[in-house]
Length: 263
Image 1 (cartoon, rainbow, N blue to C red):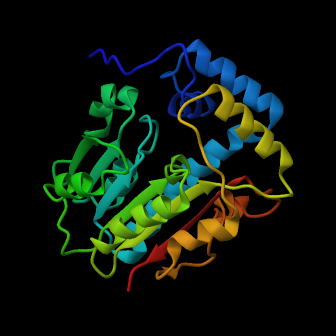
Image 2: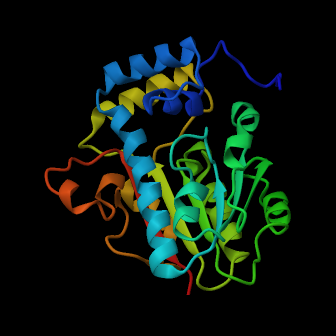
């Protein structure tokens, strides 16, 4: 299915991340930009992997330890190994997942996100994060908003430049969810200890689409205001409950994340 919104002459974030993760859903322009960014900041590819592994650990925890059986995953990105529904349904086949993204290339591959178990269900919505009401209205066809939902916002609010709008969107989504719901969020940070990250982001914003916004770790933590943060709080994604054999010798990546519960 062709989509006129797919521009193969300009690098795109989702496709570059797919390239860094070893996927095939990218174009030469994305590979060239990805290589250039990696030249500016050699560890950048680790951010994509750390974010993906964070997703897996967070989803596993929510299913096994918190009894979550519903996920609203906004900013899904291109399908790859261990998508949210695959991780969750391996542990609880009855889990329901609604994916949301507005990337036309993700839409063309959405069927890979709909391979639900017979006991569960998955759905996909082509919609912008800013259109909160439309997302909630569609998601309600699959999810029961009287029961806890895990709201997944991995690497997506970075595309909302205005702070009041970004925090407002997250708050409006959370306000629609009942007590016992969780927020899983990750975000690119800026830090004096990682100046090469700022350089890589500046290069991206000059050459790629969509533009992204960095925030400090403290500002990322503000997305969890009013929630009870699970240990270890908002940290480098590879430090959020890593496997025991990977816990030592970790270096921070400039993608921070956390998990909070609505009481």
